[in-house]
Image (cartoon, rainbow, N blue to C red; front, side, top):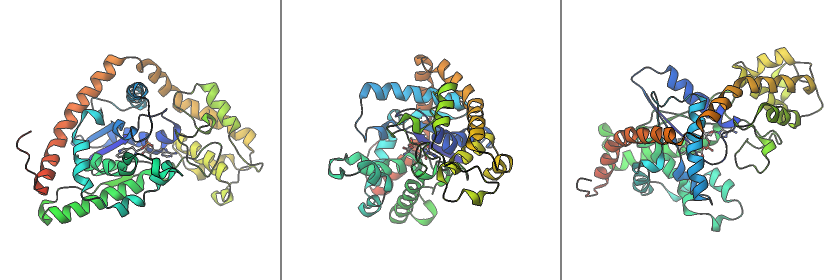
Length: 340
Ligand code: TYM
């Protein structure tokens, strides 16, 4: 098995990232057989698709590396790096741009969400972003890609690009790319905003009260949970009773994910109780799980030398793993390259 996934180093790592993706990265790293590889990267090349401040991107890239290590990514067991140090990602993106279809990219909901009403003013990088994401996983022959629900459409596209490329440029017995499988946790694939149960928890939400950041201290977490939007009804004892109650369902799902149980089990315990009782219990659970991560993050985040060394080592290993697939893709396309 080869596990590959990425996160953009913009803003803080939040509870949605953690429960939807990063916790699965750590589990896969810890539980897979020894001959599997796990590659996790900071998608800094993706981050330039939106307006950004260069010094801030540099700082945020190192900080996100520290956050991942604090969450349990072990740079000795996993290959942890940033895209910009592995040029094969950008090179393969260009090669795949010949295969990706405009119609496919036009259907991507993330482009529509992020460009909003300003489609004409959006960067070309924002439009071709999913092709870079396809290159990110195809370059390593990824078999499994742990992501939240919102990235599944991009993974479908990666599979379509791989299928068409294999069909157009490879023979059936020498497929160039492996089709990657997305992996999402059943109950935490889409953690919602604390202020609006119909919007996903996101780094780009202007209200910090909408998300729990891994950098929030215990008081801040408790305050955000206390102010989270809910309804006046008590919690039901069965899951059916949460229909049409998106905010309540979200809080129950978060509790279950933090506790390693299920929404059904949470309702069996808290059914009949109001949010006055449930919210403090949720805040306590959050602090119990995220507090130690925050502690490690604070210790690591300013050790620039160590973080640089981790990323440099990861990039070296990633470059080696990427080389054969990149060579094969150039070759298949008939590009005369000489020996780089
Ligand atoms: P990004 O940086 O937005 O998010 C990182 C991971 O967190 C998941 N996630 C969530 N899961 C559940 N609930 C939420 N509210 C929530 N918000 C975010 C995301 O699904 C993701 O798994 N384009 C990607 C980064 C990327 C990538 C890749 C991922 C670049 N190349 C290749 C996988 C493979 C992104 O912007 O994720």
